[in-house]
Image (cartoon, rainbow, N blue to C red; front, side, top):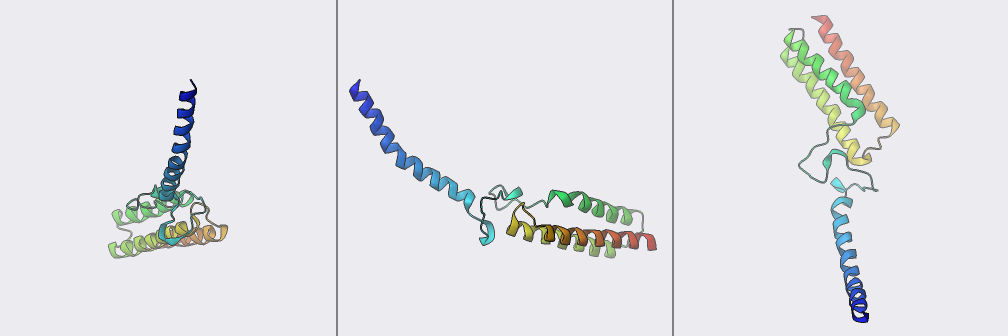
Length: 137
């Protein structure tokens, strides 16, 4: 019985450094920040540790962005928005989404109130512009 106890303690003592090294190595893959930004333990959103995945945007803006995209597409179908204008409007929407992605790389899911206000203002301004172009036709 004594030999088994000593063997179990020996195995545990030998396994401890291996487990610590494995935990440290495993944690490095998820703790490494993207694009040189510190992670501070924040979840990295829709990236899931895969650099090929893309950030899908902050959830509080997705509905407004979908609304704007739908208004532009419907305006083209109803012949209220010229295709060139639609291309420009979609480009402006993409610019806003790129700003979101930049903010996400800096803040993760913890978007500051100022940045949230700035993005929301740009979306509202674009929505008004889409409405204005649709109403002019």
